Length: 182
Image (cartoon, rainbow, N blue to C red; front, side, top):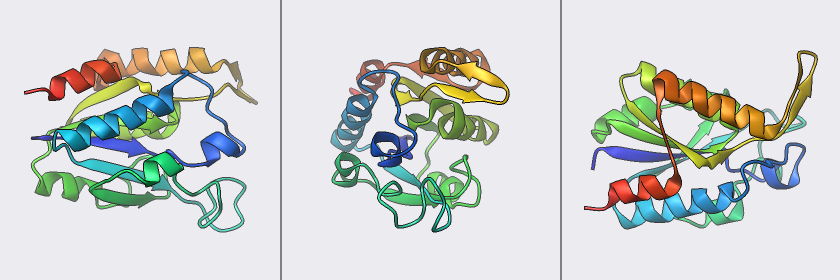
């Protein structure tokens, strides 16, 4: 099979830390469904784990927030990839790993929709890979900063619409699982 599933930053920070993911409901369950389906159909699973230096407020290496969600941690994966910037291709061996396995299509799942998932999808597209962006297996939260505010639903939808314009096929987890059927 020439595809791989990327499970991006499904870490405790998004469940019990400072940045709880709120939209869409059921995103974690869909990530786990995608992982299980990938395993059942021989699709390689790449688990990506974000790390910041010890003492950082979020994702500090070795902290509880940095740890993978227990349900992701207990599932099989083919590669565990550490990253330090939003894109899973930046400063990692992901591109070479995918090329060595003949992967032509990556499916994007995980957190957050507008940050690491969006960045990684664009990086994959720029590298000539086809991208499937799992709309209900990615998620985010409401954001408020000096530029303004946006609800989690608005932010998620805006990224999905943008991804579908050029970079990715935006698809449901159920639709993606159907594509794995022989």
